Amino acid sequence: MNRQTPVGSASESRFATLVARLHFVWFIIVATLWTMVIAMVQLVTHGVYPTARNFKRNARVWGGVILGLSGIRVHVTDRAGIDRDAPTVFITNHQNLLDILALSAALPYSFGFLAKTELARVPFLGFAIRNSASVFIDRSNPRSALRSLRKAGERIRGGNSVLVFAEGTRSHGPHLQPLRKGGFALAVEAGVPMVPVTIVDGYKLLHEGRRLLRGGVLHMVAGEPISLEGKTRRDIPALMEYVRERLAEPLAAASA
Image 1: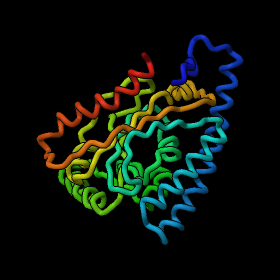
Image 2 (image 1 turned 90 degrees about the horizontal axis):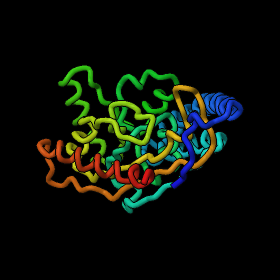
Image 3 (image 1 turned 180 degrees about the horizontal axis):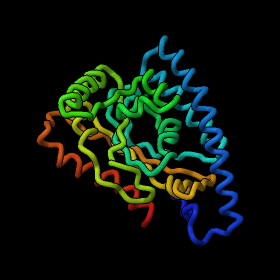
């Protein structure tokens, strides 16, 4: 693993900090303009090919171009070994803004995102996600959430894999935040395999609070699939604990 010091650390010089801040500004400009372009491409192509594979193809170009022009490469260790189009629920941690780009560009499987309904109102990004294989969960009240969950489960069983950020918020570091139940309830509802995906060191490249970014390699690990055959809602707490351990393993290995 890359032993680089996190961007924005006390050991960085003022000049290095200035360069990292200018790098961040460049990243935001590129991300904004390219997101506008790909959102329109997704709208047009989704009308003809409303599939997870089409969304993944456009998302790969979206994330790959932004990361490439920002000097960031992604290294994937893929232990999942599953059919690239088999319905699956991917469960991942969330360190910072780079995660979505890295997963879109480099995770070698077709998927949409599990998103909150509020995300549908985000300019351009929400527009693209609404016209994709992604699914929205309405958490405004328990009844709406249950309906959304069942509908999402039907879509996944029908062939649309979904990626879920399982933590309640971004960690901004090499630790895991508490996991939320929603993604696990969805996986049990769908009854398809679950694959843990760990973002290992994106926090070393991007410091969101100080608006600092530098080029480098982001490491990602896709773990072995977990069968949910025969699992019910009663099994969710144990499943959450097991997945948390699986997500934490690459983080521990990187810091050892």
